[in-house]
Image (cartoon, rainbow, N blue to C red):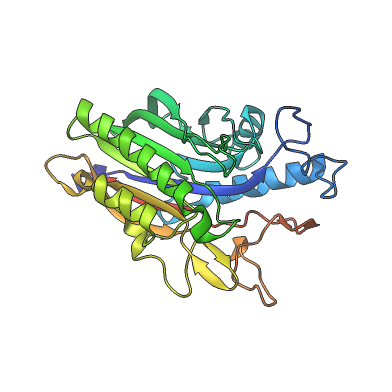
Length: 315
């Protein structure tokens, strides 16, 4: 029985502004053009695709295989996803993707890439988070993405998120992330209403840590388990701000993955993928994510976030 068991890695990665080099008149993508101050050229775009592909192909590598499912944040459109899955390190791994354009002002969305040989997509849809600014006008943000399909004879419901940032202050923006948590809770309630034992995985860049109110609301109301609450420590996280580690990137799931009778998939581990090659090697930022840009200065790295992942074993 054990000999035939399969380990599946499921990951999430905020890939930091994966824009193509074309101007989209409908979004604010002007920072990422060859003519912008950042000088976002085709060569730099190609370099980023290659580097991201190299990271994705190695997540959960202790299992000897690349991840079967990866949620992504900060992708511009279908073109960049097509280019990513056809890039040097991913082209032979059989990935496809699910993506919808949202009304986010910068035109960055969430997406899901998956190995077609292992995960069979049956349904996908998006849910918008309705926000208003101080003037009472709609404040557009990323949609919540739901992808449903079969993995290892198990029906999975995967919800991918990229909640509003803390740019204007943590407390000042908290209501936006609480609003997103309520949308996710309502999606989960609907799924459980349709199938009481639904196996649900919620992943994303939540721009909050596991102990913040928005994640606690998600965990409590939808009865989710968050393994990343114990992964975060003073020297480990998914991103670093002012020399302090945060775990904004997390993967939560329903407790039925722990039920040996009710699940073909058993939770094994959760971790941050922070291999040395994705970090800054030296200087005062040593050990932090090796970024593509710092402000307008091109560094040629990967992303300002590390990927996070969970592993499940078939019983």
